Image (cartoon, rainbow, N blue to C red; front, side, top):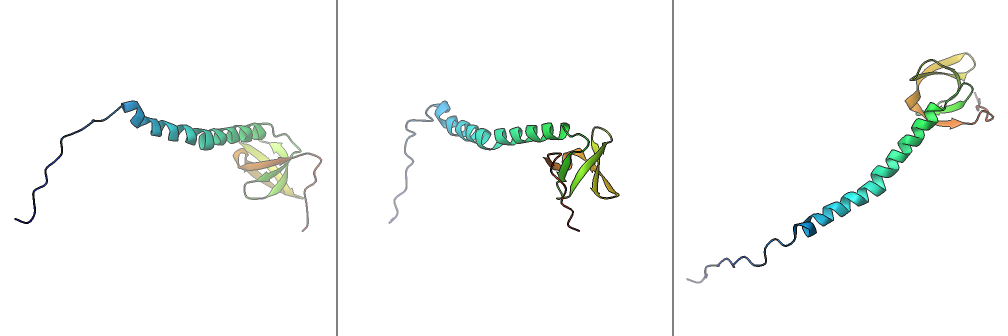
Amino acid sequence: MFITPAYAQAAGGGGGNALLQILPFIAIFAIMYFLIIRPQQKRIKQHQEMVNALTRGDTVVTAGGLIGKVVKITNDNDLLVELATDVRVKVVRGTISEVRTKGKPVDDKS
């Protein structure tokens, strides 16, 4: 025959140290934690503190981009926001994306 049979070589050194095999996974998890998970948790905590500190008269920006003034805090989850004269909207606290200072006026260019 022209083709010679291939013979399997005997198993050599083996698996090595198990810790060295797991080390890349641990390193990837640590990098993901410090670059992704930890900053996201910090941002969520800051947003929660901002939303909990809302008071009547604060100028807020909703997630939809609407700018208004907090007229009434109805309960733990809802706010009554005045967008324009005699236009009041009930808003969920979690949708507030920014709180502006009381001294900053709402731009009414309509």
